[in-house]
Length: 490
Image (cartoon, rainbow, N blue to C red):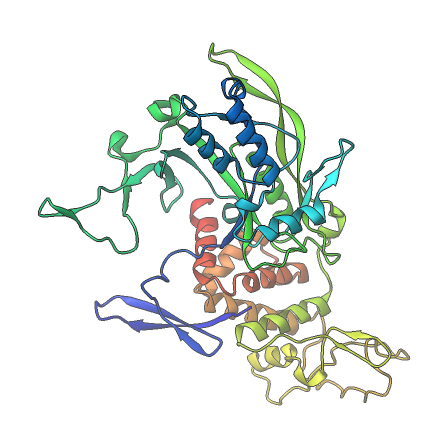
C-alpha cells in the first residue's frame, strides 16, 4: 500500500490553490483524469437470482430450446433473452425474474470466465438435489464507509442507458433527479465532441427534485431502487472486486444496520477481516415475510428470499476497549512507515521456528523516541525493545542469545504515563493534518466520535490511529468523512 504524506499547496495560474500530495517520493498533481472520486474496479458480477421463461414464451418450442441450451452452457440470462427475441417473433420480454434461495455465477458475467469456475469450486454446495449451487460465500469489503461498499440510487433505465437517477447535494439534505444534458451541436449540423463523457444536469421537471410520490416514472414502476454490494472474495486471486446487485429495500436496510453495528464496535472499520482469526463477512439468503402495498391499496405479506449479511464473529472480542499499549505501538510503527513512504516491518522466522512479527530490531521505527523528541527532550532517547520482559523471564519471540536491551534514559516516557499518550496524540494529530484535517478540527471530530477522554484512554488513541491509517491513501475521503460527522450529522 502506498501512503500519502505531506500535502503541499501550489498556486495555479488562475489564482486558485492546487493541492499536490507527495506519495512514495513522487509528487502527485491533479490531472485531466484524476480529479474524480476514486472507484473500485469491478471484475465480475454475482446475481441474486435467476430468470425463467414466461408462460407465453414457454409455449414456444424454439424459445424453450434456446433457454435450456443457454443455461447448460453457462450463458448470461441477458444473452439468452436477446437470442430468444432475435429468433422468435412476437416475444419481446421472454424471461422473468424468479426468487430462489441461491446465487447465480455464470462465466459470461466475468471478463475471465475462469473466475466464475473458481468461485463455484470453492464455495458451491449440494444441498440434496444433486446440483451444486452457491448458497453462501465469504466476502471482505474494501472500504470503511458503507455508502462506498453498498452504493444505491433510484434509477430509470432505457434499453441503452440510464435516463434518470437520484443524487444527493453536498450537504446530504436535498435529493435531486439527474439526467444527461442534450448533446450540443455546431451550426445545427453536427454534434460537438465532448471531453470526459456526457455532462449531467438536474431534470428540468419539478425543479430537478427527486420526489417519488410525484414522479410519473416511479408511480408506473419505471423508476426503482437499485443497489449493489462491492466486495472481494477470499481465495479468489484477482485485483478487481465483485458486485452483487439487489433491488430489495429490506435487504439493504438490514445490511446498513449490520454495517453500522460492526463499525461501531470496531472503531468505524468494516473493511478487511473482522478479527485476528481472519473471519470474513458472509453473504447468504434467508426466507422472510415482507410487507407490500397491493394495487388495491391494502397491505399484504409475501415470502421472499432476501440477501442477508452475516458476521460470524465473537462480539465480545470486538468490544474489548484495548489491545494493549504494545499493539498500539506496533500499529503506530506500521502507520509511520506507510506515511513516510517506507516499507512496513516484515516478520522474520528464527532457526527454531519462532515467528517475530517485529522484524529485525534495526528496521523497526522507534515511536517512543519520536514522542520524546516531539516533547523537546534534551538528550536523544534509546530505542525501547520491541518485546518487553519482566525480571527473570526470557524475551518472547527472540533467541536467548540476543543481547539485552539498553535501559531507557530518565527522559523517556513511562508506559501508560502522561508523556507516552501525549506523544501518541501528537503523532495522530500530525497524521490527520497530513490528510488535510487541521488539529483543532480533528480534536472536535474525535471528541464527538470517541468521547472527550479519547486522548487518555489507550483504546481511544488506538481507534483514532486505526482510522487515520485506514485513510492514508484517501485524503479527500477522510476530509469528507470528518465534514459529514461535524456538519451533516451534527
